Length: 129
Image (cartoon, rainbow, N blue to C red; front, side):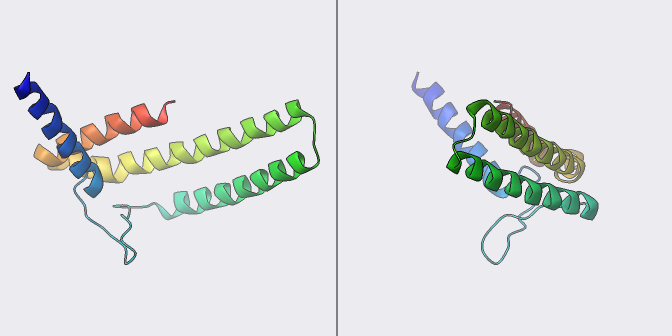
């Protein structure tokens, strides 16, 4: 039993270390200490920024609807629209992550590939809720 506990702890430590540096092993860090993407398609970035600005406007519209005490079903419809818009951004980000970070790590093989597989499985479970 003690051996199994040590193995689980070691696995969790390895996962947290892997996700802290990104599964691709690239340690791109901004001056503020934030992790940076391994590669970003400029067209995708522009599309996502435009989508996020539209979503921001939708959320402001939701706030206004709440202030005006609009009909609940109408508010819920708008909330669904925001959810779908965010999911679209998430799909684009996942595609970009697979195209650049994941491909690079998997092609590298070894520990980098294994860390990326773990990261992708973790992402799928976290974001499929």
